[in-house]
Length: 114
Image (cartoon, rainbow, N blue to C red):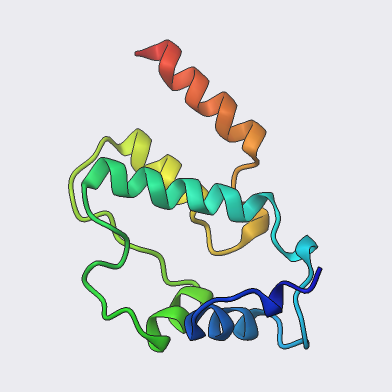
């Protein structure tokens, strides 16, 4: 299925084009690493109480910066253990992010340790 035809705003198009300038992006483009990144973003927002990039204008420049590796900063003091986990989920290189299995095991270990 050609996901480039899905409805969306211009920021989606800018971000995808800066990653892959082909005519369309296939479903295979969206992999496990995207889910892990999303989990890291949600985890950060739940822990800090702030949405990612709350201190940036949400425009084309932000979308391009994110695609080029910009990551949100954790504005509040949180345990280093969680900060490290978030960083591993948000690594700019998708191949260096935790796998979903590693993430599950890490969270399970944190739960046992508490």
